[in-house]
Image (cartoon, rainbow, N blue to C red):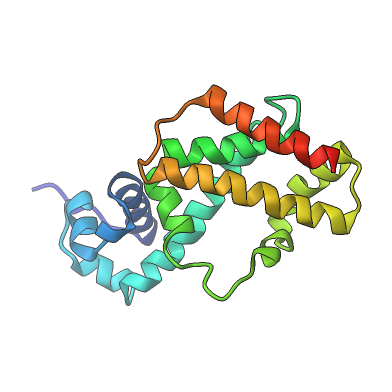
Length: 184
């Protein structure tokens, strides 16, 4: 008789990540994780007290994945700001389950749009935009908010299957927004 596979917390979180990626966060539960790992729910409940604990841990994994995804090819278009914007839009298209989990699961409740610009993870983007546009600290925060609203809206429409993905159209749209920002 073959020995039983020991289910680890990492295996559980990886399975939860893949479920969210494939089926959406709405479908994440202990039974789905157990099915994915081909085990009972007992190891899941042993490692994690609640599903919220799993969701919180997977959110951190998904957030790190998203950050790496959008920063992986910062100079693709010759403009770091536009490259990151296009990567964000592409993420909404390629990873709709993760996008909805990260940005449409009420994780930002109580935060302001301006607080996103204060996030330390945004510093590489803000720094690149400041250099590219010649903006000061105050102006770049306003530029960031305008850009985020446009990029996020486009990505959300893709993640929710409301639009077909057209990379050239997305590039043109971002260039129009970016050029409009540069003129002001």
